Amino acid sequence: MLEEFDRRHGGEPEGVWLAPGRANLIGEHTDYNDGWVLPFAIDRGTYAAVRRRDDGRVSVATTAPLPALEVGLDDVGPGRVEGWAAYPLGVLWSLRQDGHDVPGLDLVLHSTVPSGAGLSSSAALTCSVALAVDELLGLGLHRSDLAAHARRAENEVAGAPTGPMDQLASVHGAQDHAVLIDCRSVEVTQVALGLEQAGLALVVVDTKASHQLVDGGYGDRRRACEEAARALGVPALRDAMLDALAAADLDPVVARRARHVVTEDARVLEVVDLVRAGRPREVGPLLDASHASLRDDFEVSVPELDVAVDAAHEAGALGARMVGGGFGGSVLALVPQGQEEAVGQRARERFAERGWDAPEGFVVAPAAGARRVR
Ligand code: GAF
Image 1: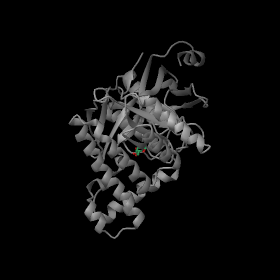
Image 2: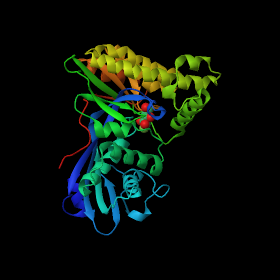
Image 3: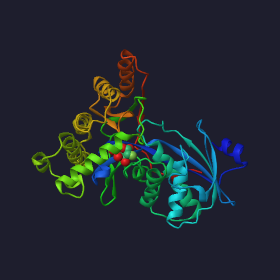
Image 4: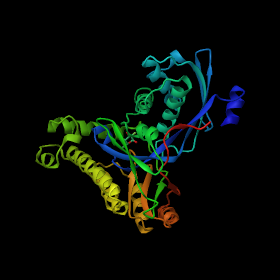
């Protein structure tokens, strides 16, 4: 990336910042329902090399095979930038909307998060830029505010209607910890997972099945949740009770969407209790229940994810579930140490039997949040 910076701009950046992608232990599609989530930052992320320039223009480039772009700062805004560049440029737009005096910049980005894998490569990208600008200009913004700018860039400029989880996980991650987020108050608590001591590991299987948040399925699910909350007379599904839901006269599909959210919120809090009690092995069945609920009630799984979950179990996983928005992407499996390789291996066998492209399995370690690295 430094070579790329030198090649494009001559010389060195003023600094390099790294923001991680995330996996989610549990709490899927609860964030935009004011609920609970328990993601963790992973040891893969996006690096942003940044240097100020004095002509009010911004150049964004990446080491990935994607087109570079140079625009005037005043030309950035909702509906005005297309493609990947909307993510980093959207962050600058959001900061300027809040009155921050962002100068022209040269930005070169490099990502180690597979894109489209449901591991929040986009949050890694936007958070790396948000932190870089904050620290370079000495803005002193709170980390949760940086996450809010990153999310606004994604929602309003890139057109991806995400909730708050991914960006908060990226900025608040901590080594060996998950990040418990109350998505109503946006209170964030780091929870020690104790996996190493319990002889456990986490494995991601990237199914390579496509996943795009800007496609319609995610927005449809959000609308169904809002409809359910309205019909139940609650501000958000976080406030709904299962018995009230069962008694309500809801469209059956909307009722199932809501049941997923209400039961998933309860599972997040159960997992937190188990982990805090030093019993992380017992989390497995709750991961399985989360996957079943996402598959059957929320209907955001796809055959590749279901097969990867089954393969993880065959390879000795204590529990496994799809992570992220769904419709493709990755599975997260909780495995006894020593079984890590077997999960990817079994998934590759099961995919080969069906003639699908080979999935990729890798260990993920809960890692530190966004930070300066140079
Ligand atoms: C995506 C979104 F970006 C998150 O906000 C969250 O809703 C998630 O899907 C589902 O839990 O990653």
